[in-house]
Image (cartoon, rainbow, N blue to C red):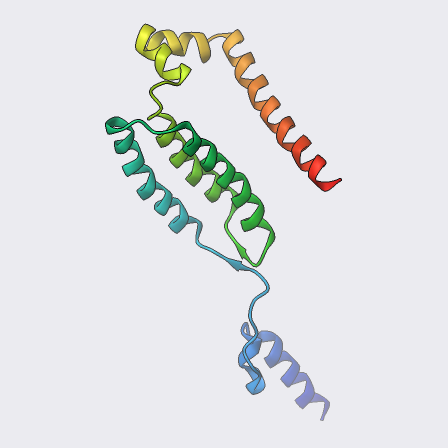
Length: 156
């Protein structure tokens, strides 16, 4: 009798889909992981027309702000609940969209500086100098600190 019980236990643990054993009702998984590749591909498909549209019409700055907000909310919502997307897929996918939108903002300081002085000057000043890298790192640190301070104030 013990051998039969042990074989049933082995059979039920070996079955990767326990909802089909012994005629039980299907059990929904606690977390559903959405495809990161499909999300990244969808973001690339969306970024293409935004990039083209930025060459034809002027994109308002509020769209960029909305995309950044959507990224932050997406990281929270799609990382905390039943339906999840891997954080890297969400971040890099939204980065494609944000960069496509940002490159269409003709009035940004970035566009103005590149138009007036060229790509090489911009690269030397902002990427190939200690001062430029220092400003870049400080800007990033400031943005992250501001974000955490905002979350902290909401949680209190």
